[in-house]
Image 1 (tube, one colour):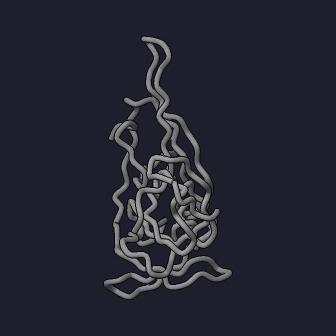
Image 2: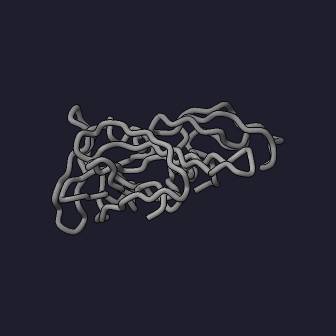
Image 3: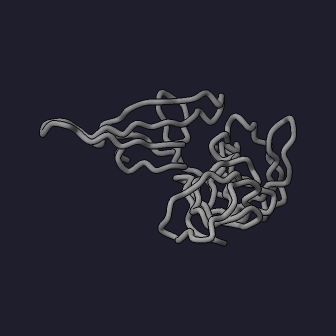
Length: 187
């Protein structure tokens, strides 16, 4: 597989390590002869160690087969987050440091979470593209605010801060895109 085909959640092998892709930044060339660079951020499945590397788009990487299983968050404690497989009822524990990017979106009622399992080891989770969260704190709504007006910061029930339109108030539920952490619409 080519580096330009990698997506968030894919697992590939480099130097004998299985790396889970968490973020990809594409850097276009500034000159005609330059190659597009793909800056990957992720972590090693076994050790949990962070991994960052830049690949040219035509470089080959070895993809690792990954199993996706539907899971549900049961609870969070000092050990991390405990997830339950919805089909086999098996429980997995993931350290919070391995899912830092996903934590602001996790609620116990969240549907559509997939566990990423490589060689029978839980390597991470994949969130749905959108989640519904409740606003617990924001500035008061403006009566004359329209949907195309300015935005204001709002704190969600998980602690995530998102820019929302001025007409929204505390207690409302909204949809948030998990990839960009942007407001999409009311729920």
